[in-house]
Length: 524
Figure 1 (tube, rainbow, N blue to C red):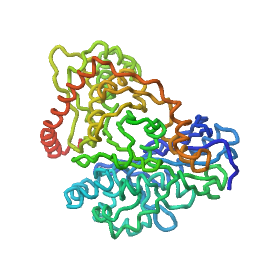
Figure 2: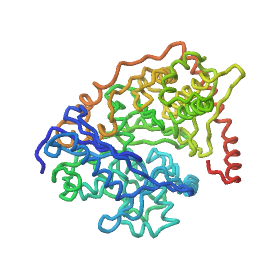
Figure 3: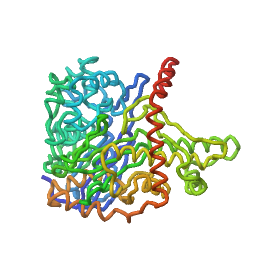
Figure 4: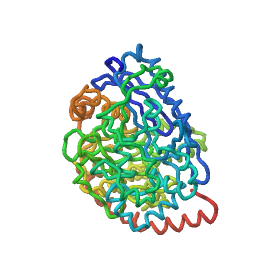
């Protein structure tokens, strides 16, 4: 066993970047190392990633951290892992990969999702997992493989997720965590696999592919000699398997600090909206959408709704402005346009236009699922100008967040905000007024890596429980509450009524447009 050290490394293996971040035992970030990784996409909807390359990238990120922290190997008390959720990472004999991983972005299982979603057992599956069925998930992907390429599953010995694959390479142990296990194949109340769910997915005969469930806040495994050689860390260093990245980010950013009614939104390229509740307080909506994901706190879970696109909508609007300026011989940078947002907001009227932020090619997944959904701008008149469009897009993000929280039950009493857009005063103001709740920004730079490092801190006994760790690692980094502007609250109440009515009325229009695109051979 490695000697006790003064640092914990959190590894956050995202879809395109793997980060290794060193924290001291009190939660202060010491250094970070990042390595870009790649994935491949095809016209048939495939999105895949090399297992071998992902492990190599993880090892490189850890070695890069050693270049920034003198004597790192001897100072590391533990390593913790989180990573991109969903997807299917198949491993066979000798722990060798069975082909490339199917990522959460992979859309090939869409026909299988439609078939399973129409099945008599679907509602029972949803009520156990609390999670809507979609193409992202390993359950749907395994069911699709079982029907269309069963030879892949025949060669596999275990079906892992991204972080599970890295854990296997670091420790030699095949396992997954309670969060991914229960929202995909189990029951969030028991945090165990569910026969009902597995049967509803048609995977009873493939149950042997599901790995043991390991809670990394209670149990660790030692770093192997081989992994020590590849990463530069000490053999025997305790390794903790964290929960899926969404809840690790929320934990690091403040989704749970003991304050009743708190929620957390990560507003980046996509939008992730979460509230922490005890399992008996979960609101399962009639539409069967969203996620319920366990937290590493006894009987505490997060309800989650995710927008397919958040700041991607704002990027689109700014790119339009940039293209027009470039055509006029006045080229400017994206960053310079971002700096003008607050000025544009000041020159526009709140609630004048309705914008639906469904600009992603994959449509929308929260709080409703419709691959044909597309963005729309409603209410334009001759007097509207570009500042009005920018405001409408930002207000659309606020309406989408409200739509997601409404699907989970009551509105938050306080919103903790993280992600790149948290730096925007304009967006914070819109979110506060749209939800009629104060907003607090987390100063945590690498919330996902911090969240899994917190699990390791509890596992090695640096803290007696997660509540004590949260008090040091999370609560002090929350900024002061920013109250909603009172005059905006009734304006956004009215805007939300129009937003919901319009998005429900537009569903058949989206379907018709999608059919025409398909007939023309355009998948977007």
